[in-house]
Length: 320
Ligand code: FO1
Image (cartoon, rainbow, N blue to C red; front, top):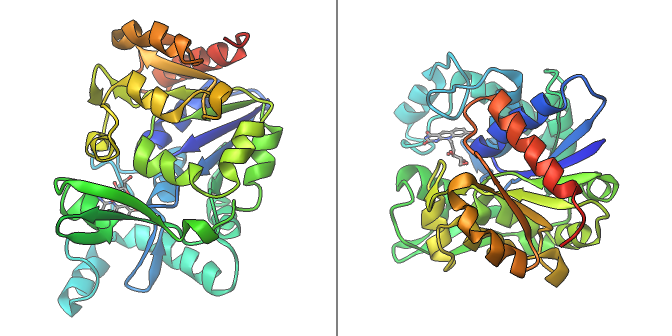
């Protein structure tokens, strides 16, 4: 079975742990198409937070308490960079993490694309999931606020998404193309899952890459999304600040309607919501999105695997 997952970083990583768990012991081929909108150049290195969050989580070397970066991390280089006054004082590059950024930068400087650099970097660990960046081009999310325009990382980590966002701009997207393997993976998939990642700054920049939406629309496989919103609140992160900015309510139904039904040129065939959000199912059905409700808390890989199993069942049902 060929499984494609559209994914952001931390939430996507948890979801992918469940996908891998669900298919453990089978010959399933799992590909994650990962957001690059959070990526940036800083102190001479290329940082790809979502690719790295997923790689570290699947490799079991992530810092589960802090939610990002490597476990057992030290910050000696970062302290030196601060002493020199370079980089962002509010953005810490751990020493182990810097090893990843240096390796990536080395490959990019040799002329490889991000997809090939990622293939070589991830070969270090038996992840059980192939990680594909959505694009090899540099597409970076910038946030327009009343205080000016800034890179997504500055808005997110320095301002904790507290500055009201007026607009999200996926800078560079018009010239971007899907990374090698992305369109092929979508076309060959038996099922396409949309992780419960931030719809605006994680899934949004993937869908905005010219060619990806068309590939999803044309795919033979069902597209099943999992709600990142439970009972009107974000499961993690600050997605509500992003949804408000684009005029979408923080509710499971509103996010599904924002993605839209494939029957009307949108993204989804089906949408999995939490049990507490089951009241919205008839509205979604009326909009051409088949929906079901199950517990959506991704407390551990086994619980998440049960959720993945429900998403696959929903995807396999005949169309609405
Ligand atoms: N998040 C923080 O809140 N503070 C940091 O200093 C920080 C550093 C950092 C370095 C590398 C990396 O891959 C991620 C890092 N993150 C940090 C997490 C990141 O800013 C965001 O959580 C994601 O980009 C949003 O998904």
